[in-house]
Length: 397
Image (cartoon, rainbow, N blue to C red; front, side, top):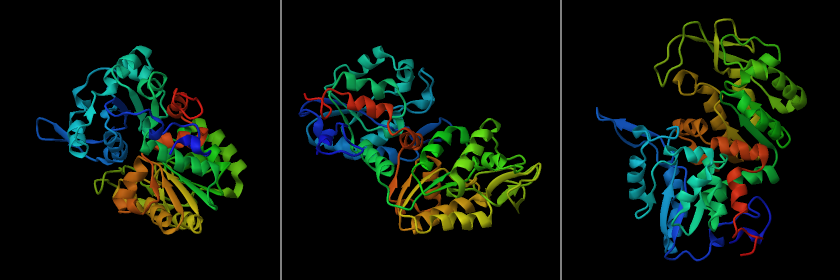
């Protein structure tokens, strides 16, 4: 059904059904196959370590093929910085794609050309040469104004793929009309990157839970000592303002698990040192690594009875088995809440996978950064470009 059929998050966005007939035509599909690679042996032969993002694009690729189109995908992989780098060759991705979607081609890594990240018009023209239509199914990259994201809709009939459309529908629904109570959990390390979305979420949620590395800057804003914990001194003032504006709607840690002097955070069981439960103040030379038992209970209680939950970012160093308790409690409370649950990508998905809970979440976004950008601004460069395509609903071609 065309996006022109109704309002809501998809209004004005061309969908696959808005493309002109594509039988016998060549279609370029921008996908996000920036997947982890696992290397084996002395030769360093690589294979795809997690094909979730490839499988997520299959409904779009299969639909296009079912309509008789010749389909070529394009993606970035890693950060080769505008030059050919064998470490980021897409050959392993191409091999896995061939197993999952026979007949779909895959171009070389887009970021091997500096024109991709700079949005060079000449690179766009080279990219679309010989194609009859364009589909953007790379939600995880659509917050970047890169050539392959914003350029093709100005040249070709264009559409949002199934994955991109579903992401917009779900995340846009959180902005428009979430079932209440609406609770957001935001963790992770970089508070400066998330201040904008925190401020935006505070306008929409009933409760905002902040944990993880970014919470120490909030605790510092409240006057607590944070020891060696992660701290963004430049953001303390803005965090203090948010604390004052939010009042009781903002839930912060009240006790913490702190790693002693000389201790290290590891993967699995590789870490060293002893950790202790402390209050909201972290002693000198100690580092906050997880939420304490009281905070875990408070976070779980805040999620109880929620009807909509958005979660982005772990609330502790979950990669170390000693410090995954806080994130595990949040994950279990989230899936046990009975709410409509939306999880931003990246480390949050990795945590759910670790705890075996990913299949109990209502919707897992393929884009951590993109999901936050959409929630903060209500739009993305990739979506804006698609709505400007000549075949977009309301433009009349």
